[in-house]
Amino acid sequence: MITDSLDHLKRYAVPKADAILKFIAEHDCINLPDGEMEIEGRELFVRIMSYVPKPAIENRFEIHRIYADVQYVVNGTEIMQTARMKDLTPLTDYDSKGDYHFFKTSAATTDLIVQAGEFAVFYPNQPHRPSCLFEGYKGQVKKLVFKVKINGG
Image 1 (cartoon, rainbow, N blue to C red):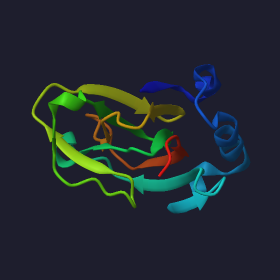
Image 2: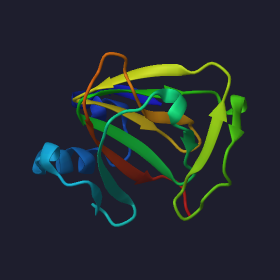
Image 3: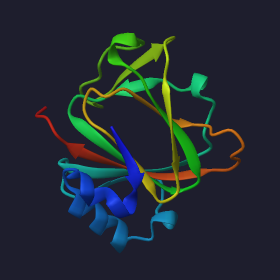
Image 4: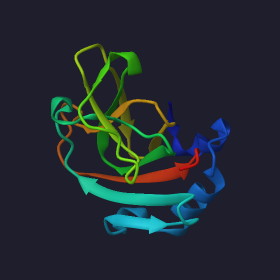
């Protein structure tokens, strides 16, 4: 897991960083309609979403096996939580088509406050619970989640 300002994305050797930065530079990200766009086919695509963050307890932890998430907050502030894999209890079976597996935990979590202009990277098998409400923030979040294929599948 990595979190920082978008200006520093290339510092971390994130796969497909050049293509991600090019996409962001070439698009009016705040006005992109919600949905999904392929950038390099299924090797790199982006999910565009706008939503009101919810209290963490209302969200689920997730992991992916094939794709890394590069979650870029265009507007707003949210908390993205992490936890130890050993502390998670499955809520669902792994969905290979959607590349997700949902979990819950009653153990300690770590909060990452991610604001507009910042990103977080979650590699395959790194538990994360995004889209959580940051106390005092009111309003929508606009986020681009770049899905970067890391493993076969």
